[in-house]
Image (tube, rainbow, N blue to C red; front, side, top):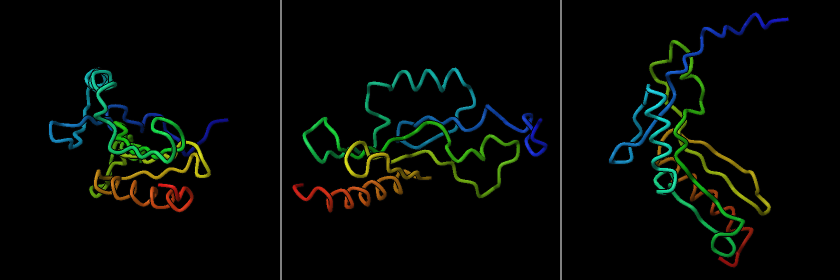
Length: 131
């Protein structure tokens, strides 16, 4: 039985992919091959990492990581018509390990991501007071 409210032709797969320009500002990339190549080119450069904070030994869990996702996780961008005031969700903060393992927030700007990272780190510091 099909879902009468879902129209697969309403999805636009050329939208929602982003790369960072030379100033680390997101720009939408409608060419899937260009987007994929950009992600591959920066994979080991650390360019997608906004901040990473460890609450144990360096390189070990628990830690908080904030990254540029490269893909809009708001998903409205995949519709044919996007609201004029829509802002893509392109950054994510995620906790790895410890008591807050899996805690996540997503953001529409790098500034909000940085502030969100700090907010989550403050919560982590309350748990791991040795830092």
